[in-house]
Image (cartoon, rainbow, N blue to C red; front, side, top):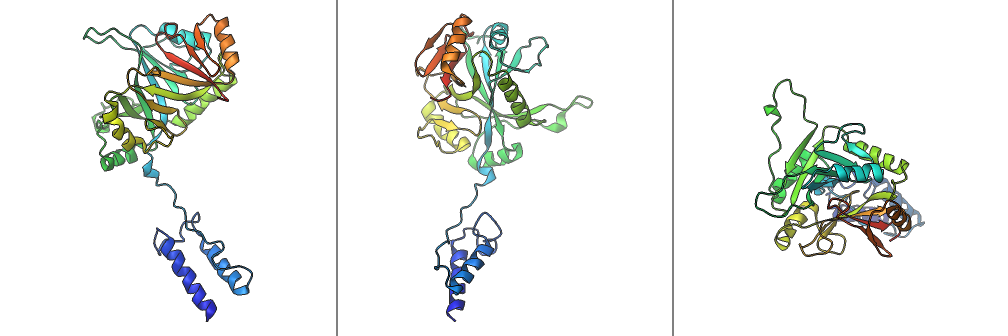
Length: 325
């Protein structure tokens, strides 16, 4: 009778502590498996184990839809002048891989360059007609969703305003299918959009990351992008919108998010000295400094970072950081 009462008690406790309810409490093997509970009961009956010694509350897996953004796919750098000089510096002088157009193709208005885990897109944008002095700037971040359809559903649940995705029914007959679909996001104080290609985005990223590693990171020993620093308008007002998209910041800083395998996204105000920086991890800071001196590229060097002179980089603010810092 004692054993029977104990069995009933254990089963009731396990069903109560399972947030999934009695019908599915043991359907998930990663929670408390049914066989483990039965074995525990048998061991107690034999006197080889103490009651409740190994029973713990189940840990629920994260809901897939909780994560809209898988990672940053590429960073768009808008140049007010022709970008040929910067593309040549990054690809010819620093030996970084060209993602698009493919090597051997003529330079076009948009060129993608691999920085390991993220691509840098360089493109030309005409100066604004309001008379403002033209300058290079990070104009947008292209974010890879886990699944675009799931992301659109989550937008409705979270109240995130966005442009409608293109209607596939409007495609002109005979024209090739688009290579990607983009959805612009609104209310973030900065250019931001989701992009989903009709090919394997992860495979392409890994392919060019492998190419970068085969080149030993190029002249500077580039490994990956650690952080992208952007300057949204009305930072205090749009912070909540970023949280709706990316979830609570888990970095200990209110305006910094780690997004999947991609870099950190840091939001700062316009007068912050870090505004517009792309922080890149290199294999060895001393090696990078020597390469810059050899190539006659001016930079400001400290024990922990190297800030390459933006005037040499057509306005690109590239910061190098050692892999052990």
